[in-house]
Image (cartoon, rainbow, N blue to C red; front, top):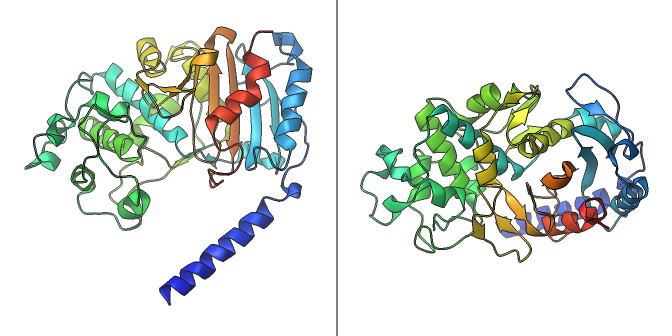
Length: 360
């Protein structure tokens, strides 16, 4: 009976998704940003040296029903000015918060950097167990060697991919950090990059332990408030802890502010929100990945071809930064877009935007 009900549910979801992602989902709308009291100066693409024909071609490609299937909005910032902004499903999406999925990991990196600046966080070679002492009591010696650097580069070695959301959030364990640490190891700590939700969640627990407050609380005071971001939602776990790997919801223009903050090496409107050296470290390649065209920093994906870096959230949530051109390109998408659908992978967005950042 359970299998029958599950099969029926999957069939229903598939049918709804098929209807949801038809050609009528996307509509050609305005592309000229409106001047709002939200910290953004607006300008025309031509005034900052961007080719309007290249932008029009990108816009047309985003409107194709079989490409960037879940796309909801596309924004371009050049030289600190918002020069292009369009929404495909509903213009009101501009003013709604959207689930940014694993872009949250990049925000966890920013908040980690703030903790480092504030003196809460020990050196990168410090072990997690030197922070979460009680959670590590009786843990085997190998797991006790996991460092903050291992966690920030997805090299903890912890094998906890399948079932993470169900086990951690749907029916939360009594000791969530210890539950993660007790999982099997697929490799020795520090040896192998494997993208994981477990590693940034452990970083979130470390931040909370050292600051005496959860990650969202830190972020609201030291990151979002200086950027003028007050409309946000961040999912919590069963014990009030912030979800470090995903769960952050922001408006598209506020999402773009994160890219601009990184572009300006941690500065926003003259305020140093996070230190420039942390931005330099976290957005530089630290490890190789299983994506041939991409590297990985501290929860930022690096794009060597463009000498840039980007967030990457499930479904197609990107803030792609090209520092040499002072260019930030943002895509927000339906967060549950399947990985098999076009537009849900960062290399596809890099290819789409190539006309804007590749020198002629």
